[in-house]
Amino acid sequence: MARRAGLVGKPSVGKSTLFNAATMSGREEADYPFTTTESSVGRAFVRVEDPGPDLGVESQPNTGFVEDGIRFVPVDLVDIPGLVPGAHQGRGMGNQFLSDLNRASALIHVVDLSGTTDAEGNPADDHDPGEDIEFLEREINRWYLEVLERGLSDFDPRDDSALVDAVTSRMRALGVSEPQVQRALDAGKPSELSDAERLSAATELRRASKPMLVAANKVDLDGAVDNLEELDVEAVPCSAKAEHELRKAAESGKVSYLPGDSSFDIAASLSAHQRSGLEEITDLMEEFGGTGVQEVLDRAYLDLLGLVPVFPVRDGLEDGDGRTLPDCFLMPPESTVEDLAEQVHSDVAESMLHGVDCRTGRRLAVDAELDAGDVVRIVTA
Image (spheres, rainbow, N blue to C red):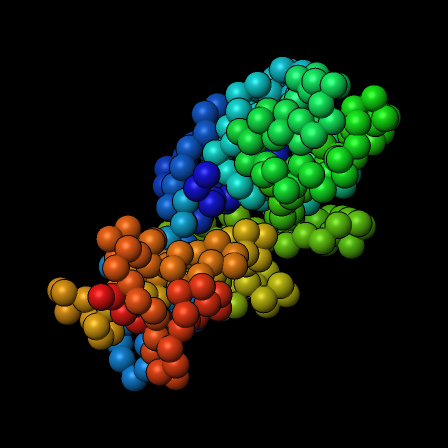
């Protein structure tokens, strides 16, 4: 399964706005439910430290870009249609939503922090965003429970050892691994598992296979900060609208802004209306250290998924076309030098002898685990 994050949440919380801000695509945005009716994949970027300055060179990426010592590495981001209560039973766009979840291996739950939309995305006053967090997790957990139940029903009670295999076979499509099933069930028998224990196991499997980050959107609206203080889960406050406006202004040359920065500079003459809008964004960024959108992306891919940015090179720091440090791969956690070689090309992996740490010159065994920011020369026969 491709390691990518998916934007989830009820309708009208700003998912499409956040998607557009992150990818600069043209997904429809509107203040009514189910603006997004089909999932879509776009290209976003995560920020990592570029190794060029440490090595005394200027990086020339094949993909993404470098600015001010920051490497922007492309990732796939999925915009998934809105979810309403009862989705696990097929209500609303539930069946499609639950199927689309499998396009992502981590979830970014976009929540309307202002409380101005109800559980189904309709206009409301003082809705509790904490309830939205609980309902979405409940819906997904119960969907996992239904799949778990089917796996338990496949189990042959005459063969206790087949329990994990039966459940794994059903849940593998959700990104669940056999060790995760083993831990969740603790090798118990279906007949010994109460309803609460089955739900607990399903919840554990969901958290392991689809970790979730809460993006507390619309933090710039009235009442949002108070609601943020009331949440009992960790959340990243953000304003997708502000980020989108900044990126559009940067594209048009009106401002100088690097996604994830805590401020921006005005680069062209502005109308009074444009200046007023940017002043509001400035106030937001001063209070929260930025719009929060890039932090959401970085935390989803680098923290939730644990992806490790690594820079592979061959004979020197340049490739055959003369590009310096051209590649940055986001490797899964606990990846090795051999895994990196395989990512470069299967032929490279087959002929590799060892790796070399380009910063220290230290020789790396093929099974050496990679660290974030490693620049590794792959030595082949």
